[in-house]
Image (cartoon, rainbow, N blue to C red; front, side, top):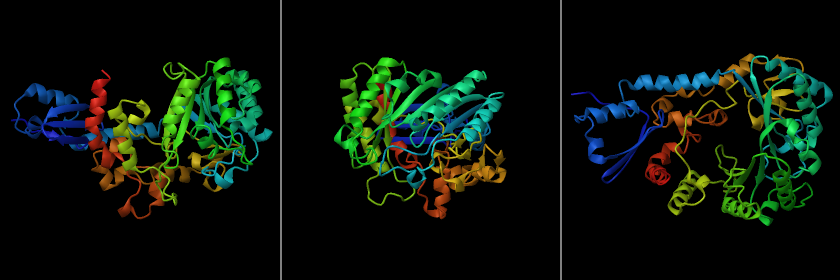
Length: 426
């Protein structure tokens, strides 16, 4: 009789005669009869056992599979083949969104000539050994469009092969700027909407309170007419605008027919959640709300973005990694977008060439999930990664964790619904 060892990374849901099993390390997803699942230790069906072994649902050694995920995690942590750099050519913004996480750090003016020159030199040097991708960020990056164009022209003239993307509020995309976007080598452009018309304008308005929605929509139309760019519209959703995603989706589908089915416009949903106690008003979405929202979307067969999907591996975020720096207008280097423009969080500066090795090392290994006994024995570790490093740091009392992934509590219950969606899509 073969000894059957179940993977530590199996997430299991049993309802009556049916059992669903998802392995968070191998991404295998199966549905078995409950009788078969409960009798695996005594079953003599070698073919079935071989299949489950190939899928990682049964294993020879559960410690080995923990090492496998640790290897995957660290391989990505120390991957230096690419440089994915976020550049904020200014921290200033023409919007006065009340919820902006940058808050008081939106005052840095656009990047000066000396900093621009140092940044160009940095990117040219990095390109000798790495593939370069740039994400233009801010503030509102288009307030420093001349700086962006100058950097891209310099990279082009020095033979640097690069691609870029941009996160913008969409209000400054004039025809003149749109005609110059080609030199940026953009693969996509992201614009945020928080609803349609009045709802959006009550949350994302110009400084002075003036509405922005109509201008943004007109600019999206001009982008579609004058470029071949993919446009990602990210919809911010909390309890003050719970139907914003559906409303934006329907509006865009009607205003720009065929752009969603063709993939020219992608509508994303950014569910605003409270991870570290900043939500004093109760406006943030809870894990329970998102769970119920996903089930409703699957049962109704509408809005695939809201249905959720089986999670993939959680890999180190930019906070831990060395090849995903963020650079502000003064040349300061950061390892998190939430730190941009706040020099007390910098790890170095491209102008003077300084880097704090000790700080970078601390950030890479702080709150290491492989040193945490609870994380090491958690079946969703490969799709959680131990949580946001900053949330771990903020939660000094690890006995009362607030940073665990919702997968820990809701993934098992989602399996029957996700399986139903998977089967219906075949």
